[in-house]
Image 1 (cartoon, helix red, strand yellow):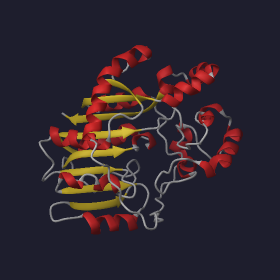
Image 2: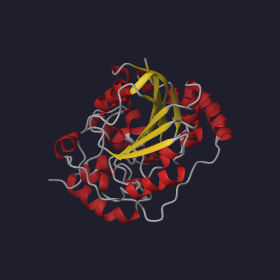
Image 3: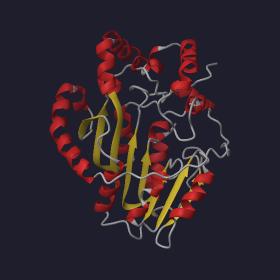
Image 4: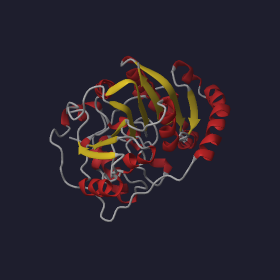
Length: 328
């Protein structure tokens, strides 16, 4: 049996049902916050409006999808997402924000400046030391912080009162869920009427770095699709020391050993949101420049991957998406 899981069957049948309570906090971790990006975000908005029609011409398959915008790489900053939510809801004072996949806690703390009454943050991995540090430094009389280790799929969301949350936020989480429709339905149940669900997710499984190994060489960025099981095991062992990206405390083979991937195509995410009855306020699909370079170098692999996995070209070029949903 393969040590590293690369299919839906492995994910659904072999995930551990007991949470690992090991504290994976990084010793001496400090919380870093985004600099003010409002000017950059304004320029990104202008660029999106200009480039999206051109990219839709370049990737005509996007016409069959429901994404509002196509952008190169990641175009919508987390600060822009937070301010969008605040503007739609008339400010966040007195409101409740739920952060899914909070990691060390920084994604939750970024909301403190908007003064919600409560921020609830959860992660499947335990970062208790970092969470306690976050509470001691940033919890105030105005904003209460709560952190929980929690499996969004395996457990009912009984730590929440139904219809009590104003905003649900997640960053780089949805691509790891084994049952996205279930989580989306639970999120909808947790939200108040007119509540918002905002998420950026990726890399997507069929795009570059879909297995989250992040090797230094772009030639390796589709090895999760290209290689057979034995070759893939050897590849992971070879490059494990050079990964150019850190998944918080989940470095190395953490995700691969557990099969923490959704294995969904870009449009399957949108279909899940629509099926749950959400109104899609904003949707962006991001196209990878790495994919452009890779398939120029290896054009036959584009045909091979499309035939083998029954994909569209855009499924292989998409690096991720950003969505903002409203509960009707």
